[in-house]
Image (cartoon, rainbow, N blue to C red):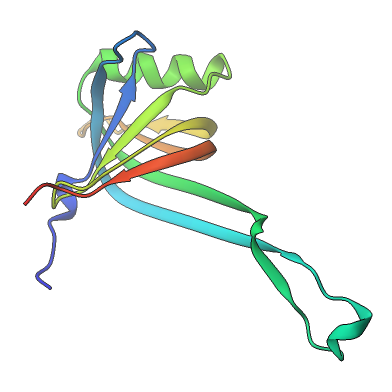
Length: 139
């Protein structure tokens, strides 16, 4: 497998319309994608002291942490509005190879920063709400 250019990882936010249009917020400079599967413990007295799980009865959570730069002020306003208004908009995460992950996310944490001689950057932690859809890039 060849390496992928991290600079091509894009985060897009939906506008809530039907059909929904997505705008690129910016490019992620660093990304952490964390999937947690918490299976349901189904251990009984008959299991001889061995723990038994039911995987699909448990809870799955997904958290996405991004540090990046905004594409423009409109992109920053959309993310800020989602954070301040406790919205759960639809997002798309586009991977460098063309794969896409789409889901509704709550903005858990949001910050922005900048230096006098550089670009303004943002850090956001998103928590998935409900299920998501992974779409493989077409060949």
